[in-house]
Amino acid sequence: ELKVEQNPLFLSMQEGKNYTIYCNYSTTSDRLYWYRQDPGKSLESLFVLLSNGAVKQEGRLMASLDTKARLSTLHITAAVHDLSATYFCAVQTGDMRFGAGTRLTVKP
Amino acid sequence: DAGITQSPRHKVTETGTPVTLRCHQTENHRYMYWYRQDPGHGLRLIHYSYGVKDTDKGEVSDGYSVSRSKTEDFLLTLESATSSQTSVYFCAISEGGPHEKLFFGSGTQLSVL
Image (cartoon, rainbow over all chains, first blue to last red):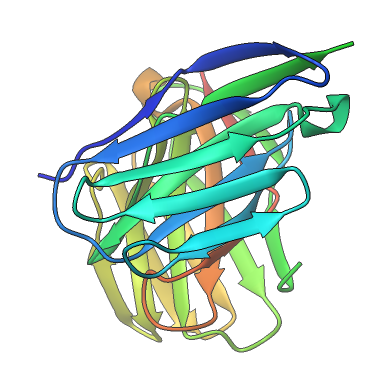
């Protein structure tokens, strides 16, 4: 059974700092997604990573995929308060399985 | 927002009562999904549909049924609600293939007392 593990589950950062969220999964997959959820809101897609070595960047967020290690990372550069949200990775093998989410809080 | 509307947005019900949640989409998407979101579990797939009258079970389907009699509507029914079904329920569609990039509705907060 596919397991998707994110860490950390909670992350409190200072503005301007860098950090990385990790997503490990247990079976082969070539398609991985990152979603963002603001408190009390729905989820929106951030990135789709389709192949080994794929890297996507938007603003202060950069996602990468290593299918051999079954690992994706979401790197945050020079965090700002607006990035405070919960971030989910999701792996598609047949259906889509989500990690538990990382609740990010960026403090001034 | 992919034209997805969920109703109701909030519902409180009692254990043992039937509950139906509705997902309505306006853009003729073929693939539709119901997920539940619980702390510590992320989102888990309940049921999905590949088209009218074509549905299948997801990871956590026990206690739930679905129907899709029209392309635009996907209904989720809790036949006899239990407290363990207290959750936030999200409907989603995918524009590409099945189980590809998802677009979510606004969610329904369901409390079973």
